[in-house]
Every structure is written in structure tokens, then in C-alpha cells.
Amino acid sequence: MSSVVLEPSKRFDRAVVEEFVPRKSSSRPPYHSYACLAVLTLACLLPFSGRAFQVDDTLFIMAAHQISHHPLDPYGFNLVWNDSLERMSDVTQNPPLACYYEAVVGEIAGWSERAFHIAFLLPALALVLGTYRLAGHFTRFPLLAALATVLTPGFLVSAGSVMCDTMMAAMWVWAMILWIEGLEPLNVWYLTGAGVLMAAAFLTKYFAVALIPLMAGYSLVRLRRLGNWLWFLLIPVAAVFGYQIWSHALYGKYLFTGAVHYANRARGLESWVSVWVGLSFTGGCALTVLTFAPLIWSRKAKGIAIAIGSLAASALIFGWLDYHGREHELEAFNTVRAHWALVGSQLAIFIAGGLLALGLAITDYGRFSWRIRRERDHLFLTLVLPVYERWTKRRLESLLLLAWVVGTFVFASFLNWTVNARSVLPLIPAMGILIARRLETMGGVWTRSLKLKIGSALVVSGVLSIWVAVGDMYMANLARSGAYSVQQQVANEGGTGTLWYRGHWGFQHYIDQAGAQPLDVNNFQIRPGDLVVVSERFGYAFHLPETLSFQNERVWEFANPSLAATMNWKLGAGFYSSSAGPLPFTFGQVPPDRYSLMKAGSVRYQIAESPPDF
Image (cartoon, rainbow, N blue to C red; front, side, top):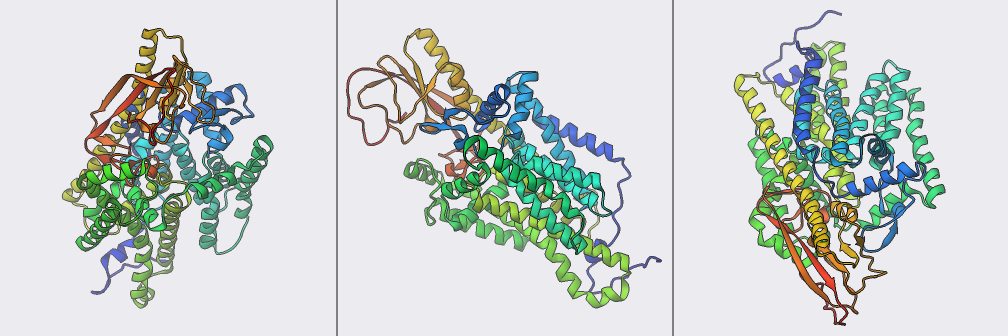
């Protein structure tokens, strides 16, 4: 069929016509883009390869040690993680595939921080390069989509951990690639690989089970019929049921459904609060949506988003909405309110960014349906069949991206036990693709000025993201410094008593190496002469034995000069859990970390209603 030259009428939008222009492949070979992205990713992450372990890194490393000795029993040990002795199978809410990877790394390269962080560069690279290849199915500018994914706080901070999130996201993206490329014409090897990756992603993090309905829905809409592709979805389905049977046989409980029940019990935010907090985390973690906003949104749209964000931020900061997720309750609320200008302004901007992110996904789909209805007669008179099929494909792509983004947002905001950046991470590649699609279809000429603005948006997002990653590294390293300082103090005193501690996350990993024992509130075993170290981060809501007195031996304060906080309840930053605050991170003066060392005496005293101020 001969091609038809489109001559749009006066009322026909040029951008609509350009939607149907076949995508031109770049004159530059793809491996140049792959090399560029790999170098950029390594340049951003390698400086953090010596970062201390923190947050749930400790749980994954504990499970990896267990696997190295008992490969078929990853969670068969007990630990004190919160207040008392618990089974690991009750504490962890993630499947063990990432832990098996860490066990292999530990046995081959050693159990150092650098060995683990370098090993986790592989899933980070896989995620970035996979985003580029996947974006090639959606936009003429896949490199821009991948860059808009890399240069975000959600990616750079998450990729700097040794938890399962980046690994799962990488498998998610590559499973989508193989499924899309193997669906029509049907390629058995590609669809088998996609099914295996879906299963592996689920065994890395439970949220990946969402890939099954996502790819099933995409296939039904694309092919409009059931087909042999359905059999390949049985691979991840079998993995889900097999994992349930295996976990029940080992631990007497179904770990997947147990994680679902845990999320239902532990979730503490009201529905409206969850909406605003979820938007805040989405806008902050996918920061390129904000930095590209001047290019892809009208002043009216940006003004509405800022107005809604400001109102929601005021409601959260000043207590008009009850934020049940706060740690330290009234003290945290008053502290955050004391910084209302600093915290509130950033919260308003992040919520606005979250609104624009969801709006980007919604309008990308709605643009095709609305405009094609408006110009239906003109299109059917002027467009040839291949062009109409091209439009249908574009709408299907938009629908897939919309389901991807909205589904992840709903899970992170309403279904997970807490709102955190780790749950938002899977939608960041989709946001990068949506940014590229919006710029592709704006209908303007890519002048030098526009290219400079696009480069500036990427640079601003990248600089701020690295800044946040530096702040997160300082937070991790300060916990290690606190543990080492306590260890040195105890060694210098040469005491014979036991060293006990209150706190977990990275601090627990390093203080355990000093031979310290965790405090179990249900079984205090402190004796006169013992030492107790308490981290201010975790020194709330607990009581020491009433039969002993405690004398402060020393207090350490470690300053965080980064001016960026990812987890600080005093500034409302809760990157790893919204229980610490409604923002994923904050910029500003970060309060120092404090660690108190006390010595147990033998004089009985009456404990106060609240714990001592450490």
C-alpha cells in the first residue's frame, strides 16, 4: 500500500499527526547508548561502594550467613530485631532469592561492604540498560528515558543498598522486554525467559506477583484473544504456589500470605493521609518529573498541582489530618512543626510532583482517545490502515504504562505496610519513559535551546539525587562510627561485664561484631557492672530493669554535614518508612546522631513514666 502524505487541516493538531510518524532509529549504534548509560551508572554508584550497611541490609546479610551454612533453611534462626527474641521467618517480609545471591557473593568475595556493593552494581546496571531497551518500544528517545530513570533519588539511594529492591526491579523490566518482544509473533524462548524472570522477581520481592496480571492484561488487549502465551504465565504462578508449600513445610506458615496479613495489620495511615504521603514519595523519588515539569506542563497545571500540594502539606504539618504513622508521636509532631517552613515547603513540592507524575500517565493515555474522537472523520478520510494500526499500538502502550504506574502507586500507598521509596522504585522506569514520550509528542522543533533545557533538567535532578545519596551514606556511616566508638571505649576500660545494646539496622550489624548482646525486653539479663549502649534513633518506648540503677558513662555525638536526610523523624524524612515522616528525604540542617553508654549498678530505683532522654 502506498504511503499517504498527511496534510492536517487548520483545526487538526500537528502533535497528533506526529504521533503517527514512524519512529526513526538513531543514527548512532545502540551500543554507544548502552556504554554511556553503563559508565554513568558506575560513576554515580561506585563512590558509594564503601558505604556502611544500614536499615534492612542487616537482615539480608544475616539470612545470607544462614544460607552459607544451611542452604535449604534461609530463615531458620532467631534474632532480636524489635524488642524481643523472634523467629526470622516472622520478622522478614521478603522472599530469600536476594539473600542467596549475597551468600554466593560472601563466600566468593568476602563479607565486606565493598564486595557486596560492587556485586549489587550488576542488578543496577541491568535495570538501567533494561530501561533503555524497554523504552525503545515506547519512544524515539530511549536514552532520555533511561537517563531520567538513573538520575533520581529513588534509584541512586536504593541501588546503594544490598536489599532486594533494585534486583527485583531489574527482573521486572527484563521480564517485560522478553514478554513484549516474544508475544507476536510468538517466540517460545523469549516467553519462557519472561516467565522465569517473573518467577525469579517474585522470589526476590513479593510485589513482583503483580507482573502476572499486568502481562496477562496487556496480552489480552493486544491480541484480543487467549492464546498459547497463557501457558507461559503458569511458570510464575507455579513459583508462587511452590514457594507457599515450601515455606509452610519449613516454618509452619505461608510466608507470602503472611506478608500480606502483616501489611494489613501494620499499616497505620488513614486513607487520605496515605494519598498525600504516597504522592510525596512518588514526586520525591521520581525527581525528574519535577525537574522536567517546566518543559512538559502548562503554567496552569503546575499552579494547580502546587496549590493542592501546599494545602495537603499544611494539613499534614499542622495536624489537620491525623498522621498516625509518626514515631515518637507528640515529640516528633512538635519537632516537625517547629520546622514547618523547611519541611512544609518541600512536602508541598513533592506532593505536587506526585500529582504531575500520575497526571503524566493519565494524560498520556487520555491524549490519544480524546484527540482521535475529536478528529475521527478527518482521520478515517486521510489515514491509511497501517497508520491507524500505529495509533492503536500507541494507545496500548499508554494503557500498559498507566497500569504500571497506577498499580505501583496503589500498592505503595495503600497495600504495603508502610509507604517507602523501595516500594515506589518500580514505577521510576515508567516515569522516565513517559517523560520521553511527552517530549516526543509535543510537536516542537528540538532546538539547541530546548536541548539545553532538557540537559539542565537532567543535571539538576542528578545533582540533587547524588546529594540525597550522600546524606544517606552519612547516615549509614554514622551508625558504623557509633558502634566502633563504643567498641573502642569498652576495650579501653577493660571491663568484665557484658555489653548490651538497644537499636537495630546497620548499628546492630556493627555492634554485634563487638560481641554486644541485644536487649530483650521480655528477658532482661543485665547484671551489675554490665554496660548498655543506646542509639537515639531507637531509644524510645522501652524501660530498663527497675532493680538496677544506671549511670551515664559517656555520650557520643556524630554530626551529619551533608544537609540531606533520608531517615530522620525530627525532619519528617522517612525514605525507608513513612512512620518517620511524610517525606522521602529533606534538605536542611540534620540533627547529629547520639549514642549513650551507661553502666548498670545495684541500687534499686523507680523508673519514670517515660524513658530517659538520651
